[in-house]
Length: 438
Image (cartoon, rainbow, N blue to C red; front, side, top):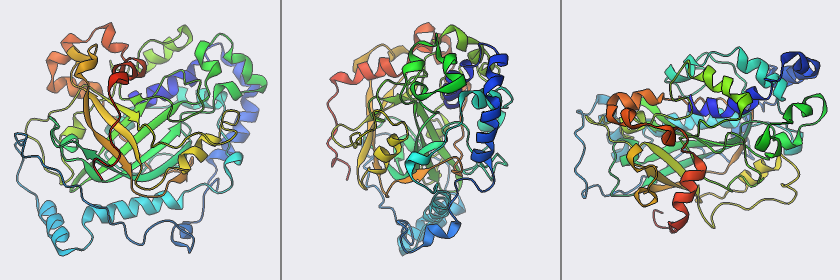
């Protein structure tokens, strides 16, 4: 819910000035919608994933991370299931594990949906189209479906929000002394990350809809709306998903890696967007805060923690000196952020992961915890509206059911804790050595 709310509040709110005015642009919007959502739009034939010029490996073999957990009291885990025992037997025999097979299938689907054409030809839904679709949407499904692809969940094949970006295989490498369980404790050797911008930068909107930006403050100057989603496969269990975003009103920089992204966004919104926040509160009392307890429930081998331990918020900080710089012309061309993402090299530490342990420590910079890093494991590929990946959202209420004392302590300070607060907290934290976990 947090991810969708962050992506949609900005764009839905832009239409609050009245649908009569928006309707003047809908004719053009519907034509673009047909282009974006048509059955054959922007899709490369599936055989492209295995063609002679493909960057996909014949079989994905991801190096396992060597982590030492002896310094921590191990969480009480349930007995291994037959699927888990089989996975370990496959590891010992040197053949592909089931996780690796599942990742291969998922990666093949991602590559089969890589958009054709150059980056300059990318088309974005306009704000009128977004408001039209968002107003009619039901967001129950994103909180309930435990699937990895949109097709498995019976969802639309094309994305309206976050339609353009890039995707690659990654590894979550956690510190040996992490105090948390599940994937926060084991890390993840078989994972996919998707980088995207929620919508077309508002500063590039022209024509009939441009006047809607008047009075929208920071939004009208936004060059990007960075969003990051992480999917980690687990043996015999549903995948673990994390979703992070930057400012709801976007950022002035065209550099995708200019700022942190985090699992908690502020509920502080301009007046035209308040009705949007109220809409999402039908699904959660904390519509811009992501639940994290599921990520801590199972580790990558599928072992369940009897008492999940998880932080209140997650922050991803772009790795200093590792993330690619802006490409020429990116400041003026909104689509070129994808070119910047495509220049990520295999083996790059792209993000450092930090945690805010609890609501009580949200205002204390010294309490921020470094959990580990996220490293790329494959070439980066373009990701368009037909990207098949689905990232489940977890309502914050599920965290508070486990930690009821957290909910009791939530104030306006916590509801307005977002990327700016956490970025400020991390200014005094030196960057990690990129080779520390290699």
